[in-house]
Image (cartoon, rainbow, N blue to C red; front, side, top):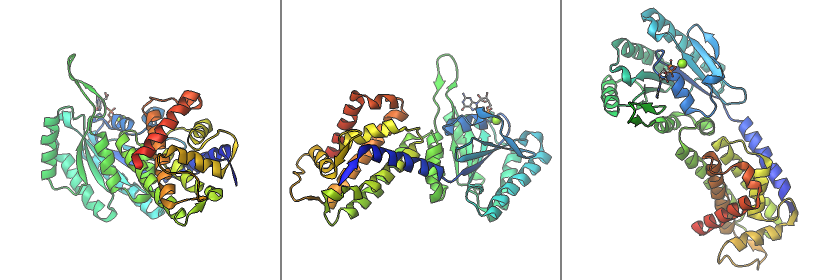
Length: 377
Ligand SMILES: Nc1nc2c(ncn2[C@@H]2O[C@H](COP(=O)(O)OP(=O)(O)O)[C@@H](O)[C@H]2O)c(=O)[nH]1
Ligand SMILES: [Mg+2]
């Protein structure tokens, strides 16, 4: 049985594209007065500069839908809260309409999954009319049950943010959480800059309330929490490892190690989608060739297994003609963890994908992979 590393890389790219194409669309309504920091928040949370790509397209009198082709996210930006009571009543009606339209469609891609109601901490107080609006709205939402998160924007003063949070919690509103954030660093004066914070907490709260089918999407579109991306990527590795363990349970003949490969291809696709990085074939080819062996060439399944086994101290040789489930599982874990480290390095800008194709890049990758295997022994 011969395996072509080039073909494996091609399969990975196909699986990645398929995975990304099939991501469900996440729909969020962002409400609050003009100037509270909604646009800044949206830009801080998601990896495409959505707000800069345009003003969005009007869906109702007071709502615009911001989206980008090929990006599985719609943000509904509301305006008009500052225009007084009548406008606020209209905004509420329109929000409820958009929610109901989504429910009627019975399509997850059209449903509203979450509402962020933004209040500016720097404004020093929460106005009674906003509390009243939230009370009215949450009452109507008892039927529709869309998770509402109150976001305290521009919370450069953590003390004020805490006071405001306590005050809102006291109102016993039917909301999921009250989350203080500072979406962008804030210059207090020449000497002191308040560092952005809280966006990662908002991601965590979101992932707790979103249904399973939207978890991959959330991780794909968000750029506020690398930790959450890594946590979800690790879960994909655990799933693949369990599958590989099963596949290898009755010892797999080396000649059949191609049986295992689809599991690892799917794992690579999941991890790539979670990181939301633009990955090209040459990067995957380098990854495959530096972990399983000769690049671009056709190699025997037996050679692949013995190459992999060489990386595992004490795993023995290819005597016996098969690998166990435990070995298959361990190789999958090591491969997945090495790939996560690779994604992380690219995500942080520590490694350029163009560098991966060089000898140095491949050496680095091999080192990473060996380290992961040692760690998992
Ligand atoms: N430094 C800093 N400025 C912010 C933050 N949030 C909002 N602002 C500023 O407040 C102003 C209004 O923000 P914007 O996002 O346009 O509010 P929107 O009208 O609710 O979309 C802008 O000048 C922002 O730069 C933040 O987290 N940090
Ligand atoms: Mg705005």
